[in-house]
Length: 229
Image (cartoon, rainbow, N blue to C red; front, side, top):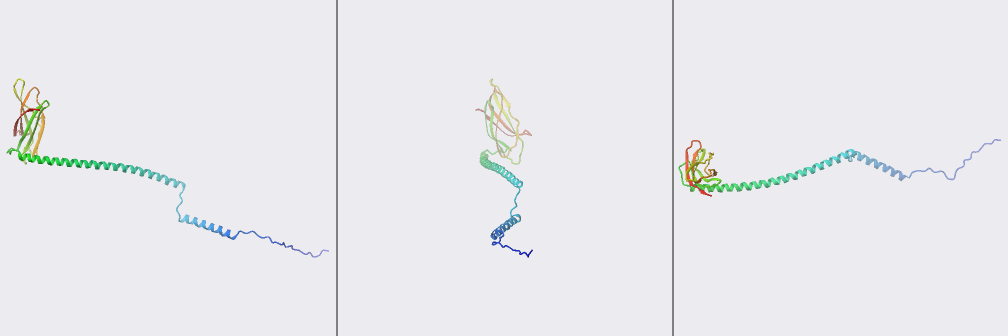
């Protein structure tokens, strides 16, 4: 009744095929991954270090500070250059003035030496020469030269001024109008001054005596007529 069953396998005419990725895609993806890995390795180990946002901000701030400092330094440098230029100009002006004064001094010194040679010889240690005097309401003005004939003498000197004048009634009067100032000279010296006198008197003559300020010894004396200015 029950016979042996026969198992029949029904084969499909077409076998079901499995889906696979193309080889070229696999190779492409593999190469891309390998290249990216290599690039990452190189950048990590040999490439420039990437800065964080904080580090980048610090660098920018430092750069701004350096730029500001550089500008301030440049401004100071410009001011210093201007000051240096001004000092050079002033220095040149001072050198020119010094040269001018030096030339005048040398010229004056030569003139004094020539004038001294033309003066009459004197045996006095100090001698008065070329005394001139005049008067006006401001006082008695005088100008003179003092020659030193002994280079080894260094005495303190003073000038005694004796004014001869007349009052409105015709009475003569002699007045000492000296200022008692003392001084020393070297070689030939020119002196000028204005001495005060009493108003109401008519000045006639001025006698000038050159004295030793300590001992009172008289070295030289000259009397000149006074002329109104």
